[in-house]
Length: 408
Image (cartoon, rainbow, N blue to C red; front, side, top):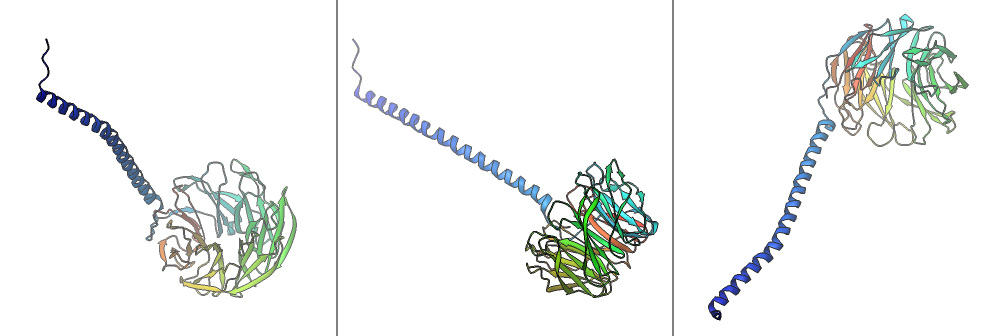
């Protein structure tokens, strides 16, 4: 017969069972909590590492640099008497190409990009006459960039249609005013056909050829601007979505801002004083207020004029920056990746390119300068080596094309 349990042993057994139940209960609670805490910790670590990695990538790509650096310039031979330079994609390789006008040689030179910021030697195309200006644009909407020229001595412009495979049509000419010196392209009447505005220097006028289609223009109209006009640039100055244009009036020491009447015609012209003998011209939003401002070179006073837009197409505020020498050409681009537009210009009398970095308010730092060949005449910009940085191309009266790759 089984003996009854001893009371003391029974109590010990009950305490042991109670401890086991408590242990099991706490285990059931603590294990899920530990798992949850561990998962949260892992997520935090992953997010922190991801955030840190993202910051590193952004730093490498987007950090502004205030001390610019350019590789030593590469020099290519041009023809004689280079006057103008432009860039565009002239073949199908997605590498930016360059076109220059060889005024004294009566031809143009095309430099096809070959990668890494390098260019092939120029391929020349004979022009009908002396060429004072060149622009690149797809005029006939076939997804190939064409070449537009100003024939100063013939009082005409010419268009060379891109036939593909680095082949162009013979120049097709169109009459304009006396001695066309500079041109720009836009759709002034917003009918999806391109127009060309040309400034006629001794004629003191701007001619607009309207509605390019099927190798011809629909109409032509001439507007009065200032005396001895040298340059023209198209932009929407009063934010009405219609393109306007501005000219440099060399003998008047003014610019003329000519506002679109919202139908492609122009009646409202306002003049603003610059320095002495304004020549080159460019436009961009310099202080990030969403209004297009104007920069021009002053050949006779060795300066740049910066004219600020009040939002209504008026330019009553002007800043002046001394460059020295005789600045002719000017270009605008964000060279140090701070989202503010900088100024690039040159002096015809020396062998440097001058860069004025934006202080992020439309004011500009004292210029930095970089070596080039001597007697720089015209300048432009583009990303020539596809690294996301804006490079510089210029032509000189030493009959050279210089390329400066941005290392900023």
